[in-house]
Amino acid sequence: MATAEVFEFESHPGRTLSLLLFTDVTNSRELNTLLRAGKLDPELALLNAALVPGTLPVLLAAQKALTLQSRKGLITKTLHSELVYSYSGSKHITESLKRCGINDEMTYILVARFDATQAELNAARQLIKGTQVNLLNLALKYSKELITKFYKVTPAELHVSTLEEAIICRIGARDAL
Amino acid sequence: MGSAGRDGVDQDVGSGGGEGRNAEEGVDVEEGCGRRGGFLSKWEEDGGRRPNLRRREWAARDGTGWWIRMWDRDSLGEPVRAVDQRSSFTSEITMGEASAIPVAAMEHHETMEKEEEPRLHDGDGGTKAMAMAQAAAGSSAAAATTEEDPLAKLKGAMISQGAEARVFGAQLLKRAIVIKERFTKRYRHPTLDGKLTTRRLAGEARSMIKARKLGVRTPVLFGVDVEARSLLLEFVEGTSVKDLLLLAAAPPTTEEDGGDEGDAAAIAAKKKKEKEKQELIGDLSQQIGETVAKIHDGGLVHGDLTTSNMIIRGRDGKLVMIDFGLSFNSTIAEDKAVDLYVLERAFISLHSKLGDVFGLVLAAYKKSSKNWCSVLNKFAAVRLRGRKRVMIG
Image 1 (cartoon, rainbow over the protein chains, first blue to last red):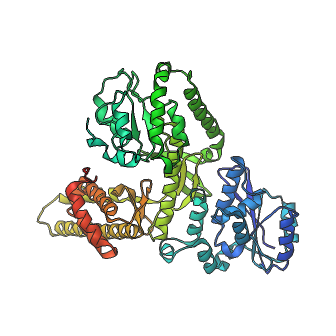
Image 2 (tube, helix red, strand yellow):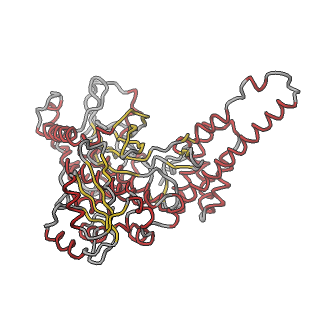
Image 3 (cartoon, chains in turn green, blue):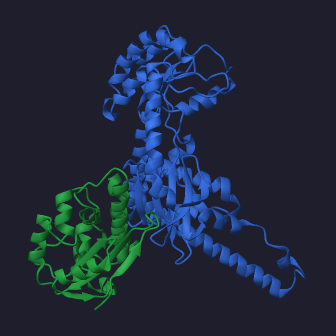
């Protein structure tokens, strides 16, 4: 069983983000229902892993969510939904959650939790019926078509930038657009 | 006092006599007041004015189309903020309404002015308007201290300072970044200043993204922090084109000249150096021309094209464009021509020792741009007249 990777934030010392990557997930419908009812225990951020080419964009979205929490207050209901919303680089909440979050048929999911304890991570592993894999798979299994379509990445941009950088720019600039 | 200096302003106000009225009736206004131009240019021009004058006022256009009242300088020569009743009008004006409001606001102000005059000279928070302005400034300052905490933790040493912002080094998510923090300009009304800074910040971020979409290399944007008036950008490892060209132009060191000048080895070494220099210049000008062509073809004007705003990345030798703070969207050839003109002036003032580098840049621009013909035609005209349009008519 692969271990979760835990990341820290220079701007928010003491807070951490744990990431778990799952393939061949079978119960995404169930997870979606629980999520919408607000009964997901422990509270998790569920991302469509095909949109994630690396960890940096996710970390940036998490950092934005944390900053927002310590300042004005969250735009969405919970910190974890804020992460999913921030990941889209769009201001439209429902659309962002729909696109970056999971749907009923999804089999490739990235799970994130803030300040997770081992017990919570184990509970998460129990909750999600799939195979946990190493985060390095992110660089292999992302969908270039989906990312370029969703984030509107032009071919000219890909000449000078990686997909990760393109996503990061959009996440970062959301407040200015 | 004819209307010579007021054409630009009149057109914007829309109602012909508005500006003239302000200038001529009842208010002791100096020659040339109210004409187009930023507040700053007026101050600079008036460098020779005596302090302690009876307060003069005029409506100045702060480059964004806002009408603001500027009071004279106080006895120390410091511009005193406009904190009259009229300020409350400007704070309610949105950009689109700017042309409609000023006349009415100015009228109102004229009547208010008499009462305000003695109170303002108190220098304390006596007046309602002043208290209001101070409260606004106070609350924003208080908010800033608590809200700035996440960002303040990141901030490292200051790297440089420009006219609009300071640049700090920092680390975010284990990457080297740069925090570009815009100043508050305290001579401006606080509400105005806030809106202006936010607008410029958003504009810079948007321009950077747009430039990326056009295939121009820019630093990666990690975040925009509106409360802290900052941009979080990737730290680009490399040297600026300006430094590279200055180094190339530097005179050869004595060790190369040492010894017999007829020495074949010395001559060969000198020739090699010369060749390398020419290659460098050729490569740089090619990249510059291509990049500027891409920017212009995409309907974007950089606004501050100088060699210090271009960095050659260490890892792949590619040109990265920075500082989009003055950029704007424009498709007209004139704006692009002015952009090129600014670049030409930069080359002439800094790098004339290296020969006609700008000519090479233009050649590369011609090859890469789709609209080079109209732009270069306009460019020839701009070269003759200078940056600003002719102010007649």
